[in-house]
Length: 169
Image 1 (cartoon, rainbow, N blue to C red):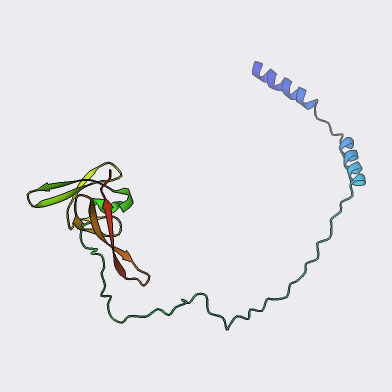
Image 2: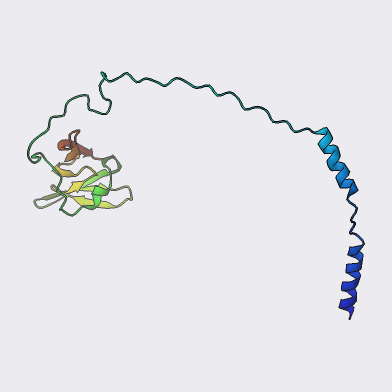
């Protein structure tokens, strides 16, 4: 019962707020129309540029090589990396991030100790691979380890390059 009385009372109060007289709104709209005339600026003039004539047929094509590349017939016969051999752990690091920290010798076997950037020590001997350029160990001594790397050349082949890692102080 209280709920019904509350609803009826609120409807009566709200109905007092409704007015059908909109004369003030109409007067405001008429005033705005009279004082603010709409004005649209004219579109700017577009100038046309003359077409560009490309006259470079006699000039060298920039997408062709400057020097004629000699085409070899037959399969490539130079050095190449062995893609079928298992990769060794030190092949994941560049040579400048590896440090030679010592040597080991036992009977007729010699090894060097290489420290990787993670701080792990690796025992390496001749024939092992080190570095990202397929570097194979070809000589070791107390002062350095010598590698033969395979580096890609400009013609799609491979060339051998000797590099080394010296003993760290």
